[in-house]
Length: 396
Image (cartoon, rainbow, N blue to C red; front, side, top):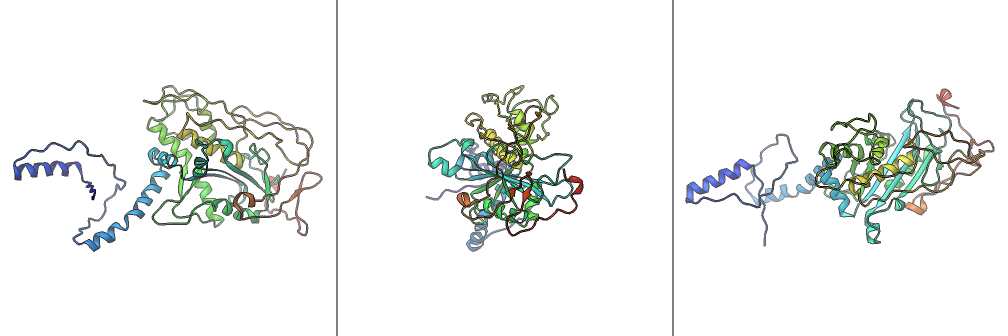
């Protein structure tokens, strides 16, 4: 049995009913099962007349690639239906990344962080919806720039990773580390979407840094910008009427929230909840320092999951441990993200962990730089220490 579907303009359907009435003398009612279709293309295209099966078959073979291209554009534009369908299929891996770079030289990457959730694996084990405790995560600090390059406009906090141990890596190995993380992706294809979905908040800058490092992403990889997705949810009324956390006044539909303000919006009641839905209970989030690449990546993935499933997303917890520079004495507690920062003391002596992704991705085993007696980084045996040119004003 062959099922056929025809797509036409509404006026064309009405004209056909008129033609049938004129020719056969029968008046037909409008079909009750007509599905309203919103076309993806909104520009003029060439009209093609197909009169033979060979041409039709050739044209039909191009449809999967066109569907994939449309899906990529819909997901990139933050269309709620398209993104929700990706999540509900439970077969994708969502990888959130964040890069922190120097304000004086955008090609100098200071930190890299990632967090990933393998939906298919967790669903097969019966752990659905995912818990943030099951996120795969990591944070890497670039040895050549740590404590030497300091951003003034938006300071970074490389020693305040709250979900594990920060790992120190040389600049030359950063692209290999990122490539190993992205190796979770399935092979490239022109007709089917990749199993890996890339997530970031304001992703254009991160994509530019990846391109500068010559890291090639699969052509069929879907990209979600959580800033765009949340803005579309709010502008379409799916988040209700809410206060802007930055101005504490009613939020305008076209406004975009920073990652920190988006997290703040999860902790308050909306002025008016979205229609036909239960307003989610405000969260009480643990205190985490922002502008740390590892923290930002983790919180970005958590924010995406909460926007998709607010009723069933548990609040994350912090890994118990110490945060701060190695080689200093005194305990140091976690600092705050949703409250004013505290004046914190120094850290006890500790050693950064060796960055080894072999256990996680099975591809890398590299060396680390260890802290010296005064807390500064020393190169591995057999290598010499190099100064970073052009960074004298940024050193502490």
